[in-house]
Length: 156
Image 1 (cartoon, rainbow, N blue to C red):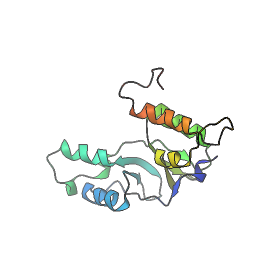
Image 2: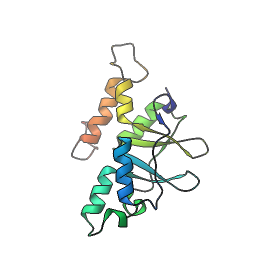
Image 3: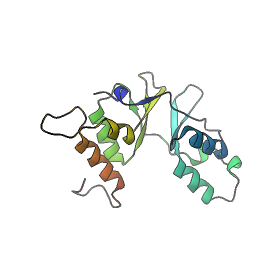
Image 4: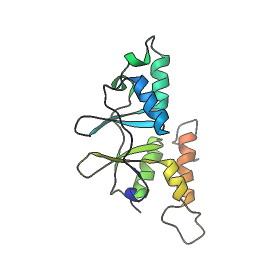
């Protein structure tokens, strides 16, 4: 199973110069918690989450319209390709403890977004027939992400 089988196409995104008031509006209207930050060539240069917006504004004495996505985003963004195997991507999500990945085309342009929610909705129980995407594999990643302590433990 490939990332392209599960990803959301045509994701919302913003520019590094987009202010946080506009970012918050895009997140709210889009019903999403993350926006890839792209340059004019649609190359992903970072990622901004609703949490990033809250923390950036909570730690500055500035209006949301005065802070840009570039000032609050995480960079470089961890990404995957549409052609990647879903189990390789699960390993990335597990190791980096992240729930959402921008998906890039082979030319490196933003093509979609893959979230653990997408994976959960497609996963099936491993009843011995070994589905392409096992519920147990996805839950192992989810448990690791939500684990409060280091993921270097045996619980992951």
